[in-house]
Image (cartoon, rainbow, N blue to C red; front, side, top):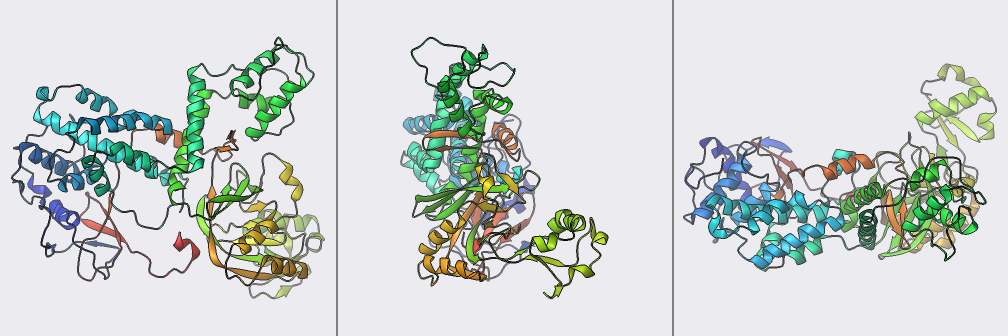
Length: 628
């Protein structure tokens, strides 16, 4: 039922409101220590500065002696935040914690009196569809209904709800543009891609936009402006236009279509490729003959869909062509979301590994200066997604085989071929690094079991890691490296590794990284000399180079939309989450002044517990990933 402005505030919320006093007043920070999780014993209000915002109520009577609108807004937000979830007759508000702070800073007075500002918000909500958002997530129907209702016909409760819905839509859309709608951890996508810099409260930003009538400008600014993102937006608009015109025809199943063939399906194939611009129809009358022009168009389609570009319309190619425009739209939306997760915080120089696209890109000072093909993990040895930084490079590396590979692959090979160790130049070492005679080991006893020894391959061009490897801290033991298996880079799909990333031209990458590492005594020329010597050498970088291992099944390259197979079957989870109702936003704010408490802590307030969970800011930088 709708709240009445005279409704007394329930006493059970008193303890929770003490928390509000503590968290929503803005005194300055203070340093010290705080246990990671502890109850709040004997809360007392910190000494107030000369000018403070009015405190929240402690008992049933509002502190504000304002208008009925102010009292109702205050009561509504407090009940939503501190009380039991859900009010049956009210539309869901997703940013309650933000709203409580937003309206507190405005004395709980209504915010949306200017019609032009409301129009700006509505236009931004509608335009959100161009970025893959669903406008109805942001109360578009209800806001439009209220917008078309004369103010004198609204009850006090309806006027308050209208104001809150507008604010909720603004904050929700803004935060989704800035950080994405989907929590990546809930779809097992993102490990530590986010920056470690604490998020600052956006409440003042949103309040200022409302008061200065710059809502649309602010929301446009919150959208990513990186060319990767804007190109995907253009692709989404184009494929929506295609879908609006009916999409493309489905090619009937049948035998493989090859150049030179005569088949009625060839006309359908031409029409299909014409829709997406892969084929440009000549002036001649359509034919059932599979000619050279059509074969060239098929190869173009295959290249941008990461298929073998043989010009033959076989089973896999026809399956890709028959994926509907609606499904491609979903794929673009998924990758717009993935891009939102990280694109705002990209440093000016970084490496991006496109796992699904089997490519590596090197950006220096915001310019793409180098690309290379890569191989990634097989579907059952998936390359993980995370963020780190390259801290050192090893030239002429040895390779110590991981225990799982030894158990599952190496020991069976040794049992089947007694010369396997010699052929692969593998040494057997005990845990202290002492070399063991392999003939003294009963290898058959270790079939399917973990070997209590290390196997190390000597450095050299035939080493599994090649001539160079690039190390970055991570819990998955994943790194970039060279490989002697160069021929596999000729494949369109290159998922061949156990999880690490094999680089086609790693020596070029090493030279570039060292050239762009000021003060490093190891120059590119010196690197080549060390490699020629065959000596295993570690080169520490003066400036760690950020690296992102990303999973993008759609991107735009040279103005061409690229669609890639969903190698690890991850897209559907994000599609489902994008189409679901939004999740309530969690508020992270700074701890107000408390004696003997640390600076720069992040605190997550849990309204269902009388506990404060803190995560201390790290002091010194001990690992490269801590800088990201």
